[in-house]
Image (cartoon, rainbow, N blue to C red):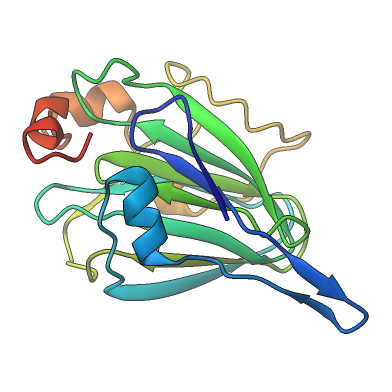
Length: 196
């Protein structure tokens, strides 16, 4: 597998080596020992979630307060999606920046989203299924939701018609309002913990 850090510190894209033959294909999605060696980050799964979405469904931008914090290893296991990560760590050199990747079943690529970084996606096909391998279990009341259409974020989702969104996402506050509410963790807290 190939592991590359993206423009946002601590965000990695993992591209597996696919073994294909007449039956189909096989690949290792994650080997934690290799991931830790390449990235300097330990990742131990505590919970696994799945979401299934129709074409043109927009989910996000979501994160978790710290504590408890939550890292995610995100993979599209059926269909295709335009995946985005957004740096929500106050004081980070890339605060507010978003980075996009195409996640699909052709490449089987995954994205590692560290604590303090938001995540969202636009489903490009009907019946897209996304796997989220999480470093911590869900704790009620710790979810951070940010308006995915916040003009200050200017995320280039690429939809040609209004996307399908939950009421929660459509009514989520802006990045500025979320920061003003004190819900975002300063970047220096992640640096101190050795988790940039």
